[in-house]
Amino acid sequence: MQRRRLATGLAVALLAVVPLTSVSAASGARATLKGSTPTWANSKNLVGAADPNTVVGFRVYLGWKSGAEAAARAVSDPKSASYGKYYTPAQFRHDFAPTQSEIGATQAWLKNQGFSIVYTPSNNHFVSAEGTLAQAAAAFGTSFNNYKVNNQIVRAPSGDLSIPSDLATSVNAVVGLDESDAFVDLNIAVDKNAAPTAGFRNSPPLSDFWAEKVSNYAYPAGFTDRNSPAMAPWVIKGNTPASIKGAYGISGAYDGTGQTVAIIDAFASPTILHDVNEWSTNRGLPIMTNGQLVEVVPPGIYRRAENKQMDPRGWYSEETLDVEAVHGMAPGAKIVYVGAPNNRRDLDAALNHVVNGRLAQIITNSYGYSTELLPPGYRTAVNNTLIQAAAEGIGVYFSSGDRGDESSRFGFPTTEFPTSSPWVTAVGGTALAVDAGNARVFETGWGTSSYACNTTTLVCTRAGWTSGAGGGTSRIYARPWYQDGTVSTAGRGVPDVAALADPQTGYLIGQTQTFPDGRYYDEYRLGGTSLASPIFAGLMALADQKAGHHLGFANPLFYSHAGAFFDVTSVKTAVARRNFNNSVDGTAGTSDFLRTFDDYSGSPSQHTATGWDNVTGLGALNGIFTP
Image (cartoon, rainbow, N blue to C red):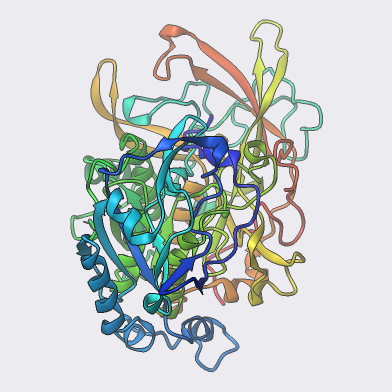
């Protein structure tokens, strides 16, 4: 079952591609930010006028000077004479950031409208401000309403925002006056829909490795492919760093020493250092010190009550998974955990903070919007941050999502954003079978249907498609140059690479949880592309260490060295799983299920195939990546 926060609200209205952000002259001294009204802000969903006294925080984004994107490509393209000649943050700011006069003019106008200036980063990427909706309505020439989108009440302007025309050459987006950020997904999946911090355990039977224990349940029709025992095997207790590295052919002295990986999430687990160290001790890994695991709260973030925060406990398991996945793959690497105080647009500010300060050479992110059909300002703001990252030689990895092609929610296939950005390495998901000697038995794409099993008759009945790795073709971005000759679609293909994600073959993590008999550390299996991204990021820390330099935005390298990847192909099989009905023990009974692998019945535009595919990209790593 899914634990990710589903953005079902967008299904109501996001059915057409909105134009890219543009600023065009309007009448008089005003210019319009086209597309700044979300498509769900329509009469069908209208609830009524928003309270004009509501205090809101928002950001006015300014664009880079001409040449920034070309510079990012030049330093990332192995065929370029500038390859690897990365910009420092100071050099990027000097060459491409908005000028102080442009920032000053923007700040002066906002102050003149009655807003309080909160923060401007040193790259002048944005000015964050706060004020009331009444002030925003007057300043941006529109009114604000509340809309009901699949049981969420969200705010948006009734028409496109406008700004003074003398700001139009520098300002390209205003983000935060609408609440599209309510639709961020957390790409994490566990075995049952229960908050891990409230206590969760995997029920036995549990195998230590693939097919160690075999059930009495027959496979569903069509799911008895190679490498499978006669009957469906029971799920594993959980993969470990040793089993994953063994399956991926990772060996040798490289441990990530001297490398830094940043993890961007919301909130922060209060027990993370204790948990990762107990987990590390149990795995035979070195423990982490405060100096090796650093937690950072970015400046200029919002803490007001108007930021409708989700339950932070759901993000505690995310942080635990991310930290333990990176540490498990690269136990010598430094981890910088950057935690926003909410799961909304402050995640974008956290990303900018890491990039602008170059706090790490690798960034892993396990969240995203469930569709890329967002107000253009949201995409423009993040994409510019990603361009700066590439120019500075920072590799940014995003999980591809946990709902396949999203057609089960929206009625049409769509990729997530920022995963679809051409400046992101999109990490898809696999199901990985590992034997007792930590060798790969098989690896296939993650796509799952569930079958409920009768323990008396041993008959299992299909309940429906549950989840799978995100992927597909962007409706917004054209196919980037590095995918030419590999991806056949005109749009940007997602994902680029893949790693273990299927929760049936997931990762054994350790976390402090609250059980009926007390609060203490325990271990359980976890999955989702939230696992794939930090695994891949950790393994890229080994690649940087081996190379002796930062590989930066590595997509051009990946596509020109496709032979370095294990080609993930179709393997149709299934496993049996037993769940505690109360999530923690057998006092309320148990339920048995079958879960299929390589199943896209609920995501029909996807398939796992030879070569690049829209579930696993180029495939999984096959040894430390070496260009």
